[in-house]
Image 1 (tube, rainbow, N blue to C red):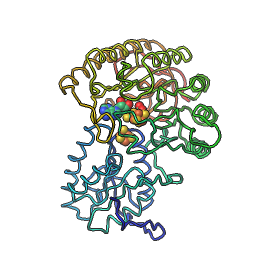
Image 2 (cartoon, rainbow, N blue to C red):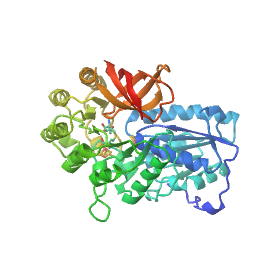
Image 3 (tube, rainbow, N blue to C red):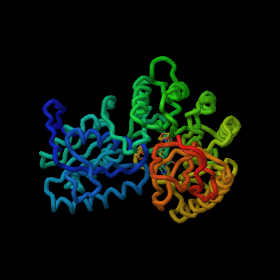
Image 4 (cartoon, rainbow, N blue to C red):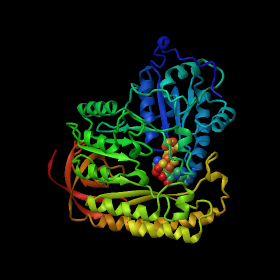
Length: 459
Ligand code: SAH
Ligand code: SF4
Ligand code: F3S
């Protein structure tokens, strides 16, 4: 379905974006956020400048997500809005990229249904973006590039949106094929970035004033298995812990099936490595975990939590849960509810199962009514909200180091910072603290965040 007219010919590219503005709308996960930051830098190299107003844009990119039906549905309504803008600016270029368009059927649907779209490109096309945009702005027909060619992304520029925090991908793709999940199909097989490329990038970020990095991968624990030698994720963390000028290292996501004792030890020992694991459980019933192809049992998961909590006091653990997986009985669902009670996650994102075309689970009969799925979701949310509040209550009256992110979104009088264990804290403070560390004594705990007062010096 890729367009044979597309030729990579970067040498002849002119800065055709000079004097023009672009806007990127991003859906989905942090990996997509990061991809959008790469797109932004690539586009700015063509001369474009950013705008947040679609009315002023000469180029709009929609970076899509395919993980559930909801984000896919939103694409249609957004494209409808952008279509109207073309009437005022006929040179406006609309491009749709990301995980949804990496799938042949979705790419075809967008091309046929939204004829105003100039370019449809997949997750592997980033290195070809300048040439594709050049083609798209001249062509009368929609340009499509959804090749699964794993083109090398090393050396592409990136424009982080934050001045103190950066996303750093360490492994692309996923080999796990959880039976419900589309990600392995739209992101391809696992590819670890080289140890040196990552460490060099993080050193440069620290030199440029970045204080916090989040290492990204669908499963960071499998980092290195495809590299020569026997380098592991724990080795990478220990190396990055030495980077001068860096304050904090975060990482996500961890798959429970291969979270090693060495990794727990690295987090325990690395003074920059934050005490937080995003360790999605997905379900609490062994039969459902088996049908999901998660390759761990409820008992193994609980043991892992115990090991982490024993080794790392104050650690926070967050999770993703799916309710209403095909065939999930009331009893099996209640095992998930019980898992929440046993683990006591700091927070958990629960999702209603959404069949994804092409996955193994999509072939199973989706036999639970939507009303029942919603009931289960609300039941879990209620339990989790109580537990989150109770866990946050334990932090009251204690002093925590926070990295300041800037003024609070809801109350500009307050500053917002994040503790090492990833809790948001709002407090009164001067507004020149962005990217700096300060201590805050927690005075009030809520379900989603904390309030407190600054104490002591700022670093
Ligand atoms: N790589 C990560 C996250 C992938 S997607 C991991 O392994 O955990 C983020 C979350 O979306 C998943 O953890 C899962 O809870 C949810 N998800 C994925 N596919 C889904 C589907 N078909 N329906 C509902 N939720 C889904
Ligand atoms: Fe999807 Fe499973 Fe891979 Fe996560 S580990 S991206 S849930 S297939
Ligand atoms: Fe992320 Fe959605 Fe793709 S969750 S990897 S943007 S399918």
